[in-house]
Image (cartoon, rainbow, N blue to C red; front, side, top):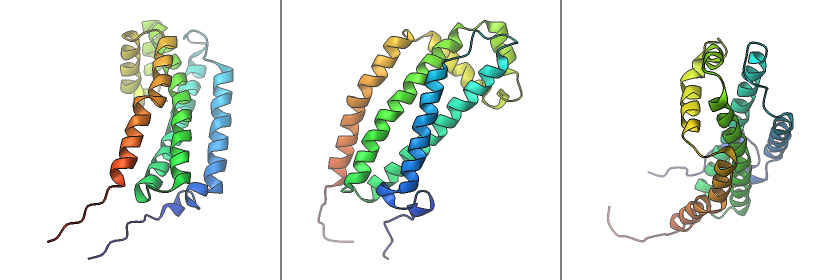
Length: 184
């Protein structure tokens, strides 16, 4: 039985690693992340800033979702053709952008840890965030156990060019290996 090893990725972004719609998608994503970074985080959480906190959390979740869509797409491109230079370059570029997003997440999570418990609980009880309140509470607790935001950001930046890059290189080299064998 012969199977097709090439997925139909054109339904997501037509044109593979050279997709114009992917380029537009990433241009919009970068602009949205830049705007998010420029605006900064809301003031201390209280009843007057709760709506701003909800909007901030919804925006970063949207940025995260869109980044994961692009990363998944690039992963599929590389998986179906490890020699696609455009896909490999795209994956490297997305790793850099993902590090930038992780830096924003780190600062936001550190800010979660600084908020008053009562105000935080009111935020978690809001209908807009209650579906993700468990995850947000986990992030808050984890942030309380981490280094300060600047050191965590540095660690994330180093990981992008360090062990993440080595992992990608290993995947590329090992996926290119071919073995001949006889038998069923």
